Structures are given as structure tokens and as C-alpha cells.
Length: 93
Length: 306
Image (tube, rainbow over all chains, first blue to last red; front, side, top):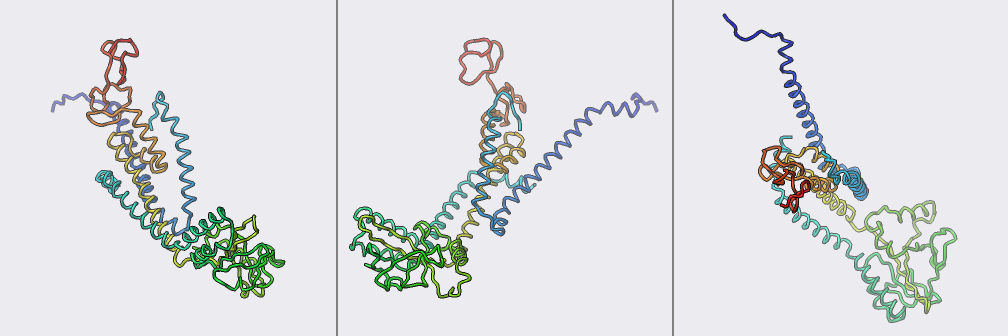
């Protein structure tokens, strides 16, 4: 049988796909990262729904929860607003 | 996670917000009605107390005030008596004619044994704890059987051999400095049955509503960011941990970028063409091709009149 395709070594063959393999790896890593974030988000959603029951059982004062939430809001606004409002830096979250 | 995606993308947020607001209004109405009913005597007491106070401010304390004192005394079962005293502490009028006013005089002085309490020598087993009327109105004692006032009293009296014989009333007063007359409002606050449990249940329902709102904000951000392809999960996490602040930041972020009219993805304001579908999304100068803003009359680079 006459084979027309030129013979190349495995090493060289892999080198040809190096970039593509790297791209695929990055893509898989990105998908895995997003999957993890989605899992964290899902767990957070469940925790938020469970939280009232837990606070009721543990008898946590609603006012102290509100105070913590208020502090979080203020800190977030104080930290993120200047970044977001700085148009030139093009911050991507 | 598939459940989450199904929930977010099938949920009609406009309808959900409408239903949420209706449910919240209904719950708050029930809450208001139930609280008013539970604390009706407190509200009645507050109303008559301030009515009495206003009358006294206008015309001072005199013998014509008796009918108002009767209304004040009957406004709540917790009121033991409302007594009108002259400047020399003689009982001029007693609304409920209770045992505290059975003698003609009610001269109170700080007790030698219990220094925080007032006592009348004619009634040595009755102690009076002087409190402001606000404390009577807002006292946890009307909700809880074990509250700060009760604990304080029990700590003071626990070693007393006459513990069961002693009675402690809360006393608040209104005085007229012009003629020295006084009104003593003597209270024996008792816990309203089931008030604590009912308030706890209502608080629990409100916390659930608050949790639904919190979750709703995060889910809306997730859905909206997915629609414009702007790293939805990251924004959803920002929203779930920071809620309203995160929502504000997301909206500002969205405002600072543009959205492609063709495919609806988020694009940087500097982009001339959509990075997703390639459609031209920004006007450019005919002369130098510099991107232009909506209200520009001249090109910022070559000053070409537009």
C-alpha cells in the first residue's frame, strides 16, 4: 500500500495541537471554575432560605441581623462604588 | 443546579414581584391588626395618658379631672389604681379605690430595707418602683413573664422572708408644680397571654419574606446578567452576599456599558461593533472614524461638524 501522508513523530504531532490543547484546557478550567461558583451560589441560596429557621431556633435577634446587613451594605457601597464609577479603568468583575 | 437554572429562567419576575408585594401587604395588615388587638389596652392607656397630660398642661391638676382619671384607670387591667393626691399627700380621689389608697394619706419615702423602692409606712408590704410612663408602655413585662423589671425585683427580694407577702407595683406620676397636686398611676403589669409566641411567629414570617426578597434580588441579577452575557454567576454571588448594594453596583455597571440592540449582550461603551454578533453599535465620525457619543455635535478628535 502506498501511503501518501507524510510520516511525523508523535512529539511533532502533539506540538501541532499544543495551542489547541492549551485552549481546551483553559476552557475546561473555566467551565470547572464556573461550575464551582454555581455550586457556591446554589448553596448560598439554600442557606438563605434555611437561615430564618436557624435564627428562629437559635433565638437570634432580628435587629442584630439587620445591623450586620446594614454594615455589609455600607462597606460594599464604600468599596465598590468608587471602582465602578471609575470609567477609565474598565474594571471587569 | 439544573433546578436553579430552571427556576431562574422560567420565573416571571414582574409577576413574582407583584404577588410578593400583595402577600407582604396582606401579612403586614394581619400583623398590624393582630398587634393592635394584642396591645389594645396599652394603646388605650397611652391615649388616655397623653390626653390627661395635655389637659393638665392646659389647666393644671384640679378636682375636675376625676372623670379623665377614671378613664385612664379603666383603660387597662394592669392599672391597679390612679390616685389624685393633694400637696400634703392626702388622697383626694382614687379611681379604683384599691387597698393602696385605703388610708387617707399616701406618703411615700425610700425604703430603708430596699433602697431602690418607695414605701408607705401604713402599707409596709407594698413597694413601689418608680418608672417613667414610657417604660410601662414599652416594658417587655407585658410580653414576657421573665423580663428585666421582674428579674430586678426578684433579685432584690429573693432572700426576703416575707417574699410572698410583699407586693411590688410600678409607679409613675404627673405633678403640678403650681399647686403641688400629684397623680399617681400604679401599675401591676402582667404578661399578655400568648403575646410572646404570636410576636415570634410574626417575626418568623417577616424573616422568611425578607429571605425571599434577598434571594429574589440575587436571582434577578443572575437572570439579567445571563441575558446580557455579563459573567452572571459572579454578579449573582455579589448580589447574594451584598444584596441591595450589589444590585446598585450591578445597575451602575450596566449603565456604564452599552447593550447590543441586535443580540442583547453587554458591550463596552468604547466598542464600535458588537463583540458577539458584529453589528455596528456606535456612531462614528465620517471623517476620522472616532466613536461618538449620542449628543455630540462635533467629533472629539477632528472637530468635524456632525
